[in-house]
Picture 1: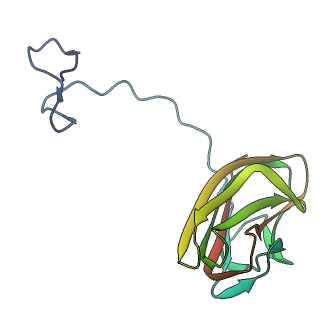
Picture 2 (picture 1 turned 180 degrees about the vertical axis):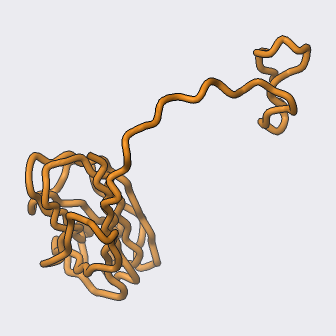
Length: 165
């Protein structure tokens, strides 16, 4: 497989076996304008070993946050102080006697459609994680629930939230 020569130098621009640019290739374009500054607003919370009943919130506590974060952790939830768009990553690692280990991201006490992770367990260790883009219209809370059909014995669970706008 070869790719079109954009420099017209008589050589293929991409090494088709290793998928890497060849030397003296012109794959660069002009430098664009400076983008907006990042928010520098991140929080990370989680729990180590814990047993969580089915359909119950997974307990979390603050692990780390950027110094000027607008978010906090209380009552097993990440508190979002403002309306905005957030990148949310959450994970669970543990086992359950049910067929699957399952966890769901909740916004303001209600499950968010299509924001669940499910991994086959049957008593064995399972790990699952997901990243979602969430937009809120005001102050809100995010939490993770054990949505397995049996109690979950967790080795750890975590949530990281980055405010993007």
